[in-house]
Image 1 (cartoon, rainbow, N blue to C red):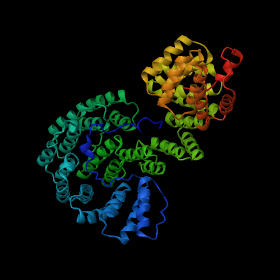
Image 2: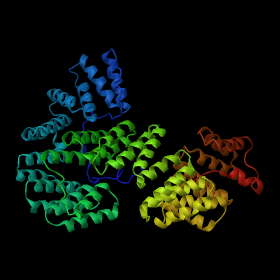
Image 3: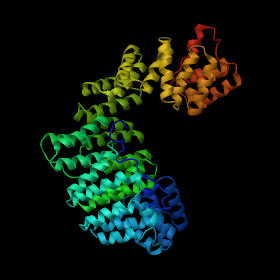
Image 4: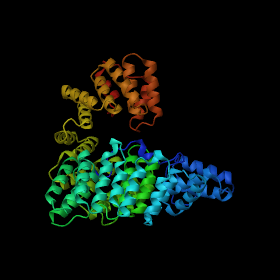
Length: 581
């Protein structure tokens, strides 16, 4: 993902495991897209097994269909009801989830997930007392955070500030204090107590000034209560850390135009949706995929069309390697949203990830034609061209992206780094070297750039002292990166330091065992330290790993005859010339 905000955390990563206790043991499945209805079987066991397989494949869309078909034969099977219910929630199928949840509660009144879904449905209908009753009846352990936050917004829906804040203040876990105060501030503002709102929102903001929601809520409160300059200062501090976030840029533009910012939450239902969004966002970063997916789906049920929730859901699908579902979520971002332009770019990148490269490039070309000065769109197009080994085209597109940026900043180092790679692959080393140096000027000690430039110098036998310093520093900065460790090992090899090369390359292989280049390099090092059997093993291993076509002939020749004598300079360079790092 090349656009900055898409992969960025938007809620603080401060939530403990208690936040996700509401997700029950039934959540063994995850989600995978399938636009076509699955072909159901003729038997109940067959559909049940098909459901299990679909769940294991992260295809809860199909799993829901199979489980529901199985339920037609065995409608009282609690296990089937629970599995179909969880799949329906994960698919955003609130109507069927509600019906299945009611059936599940009839057989298992303490099921926390079913009570959560039933409570959310009641909130959607404005039935806040009913929702509170559902939340109060679940497993006590699961009510520490999730139920307390939602209960508070139910009280807010009944215009009861005292009980809303009391419900929140019962949350004692210091790790979620910022999240608690954030919602307390939103509720106090919603119910017309600006003094309490200011105190709580500032407390949340002070707990983590790099969390988008905390920053935005506090700034919006300041702006709507007569302090637009204070709001601008809050935004400016955030933008110094996270530049160019579309939502923040839009808010700042609105303030500069002398216009009023809207509050984040305009109803208790919005507040409950914000709770679920925050929990889903946190869970998506803690590998709690299905609970996160359910929270985000429920949030969108309460607040359809919310742009940030849709983007977070799309990112979760991207992390789960579910490209079609990610595309659908990105497409749901409203056209008027400041996130829509980046969502369009992400759709193209998702098309590339699911093997539709031509469609991806065409989509990006269409975006660039419509927005010729969009640096993100241009860099994304260049990235796809580079992946397709169209290095000259990619370099030309990076030219346009760099021109669109104007005066480059630190976060633009990647444009020069990747253009440098294109130049290097296109045999234009002077231009490549200049770009790598520019990238380091923008981002000193960037390990990827140190690695690439240092390795290239070693490979050419120039600037060796500085090259080794760069490679050693890159390893210090990223000691667990197999490719970077390999570069240092291969540099030792190029300089005839074979024992050091073998030792370093062994470490690289331990970090990245399945790469053909690394195995080939280690084979060469073993040969030079007279470990010939092991050398042949590594070369055979490299051959079987699907190396680049241009590398395969050299590997096969080494398997047949080994390396030439190291003392023969006419053959050594040719035998050792490999891409690495």
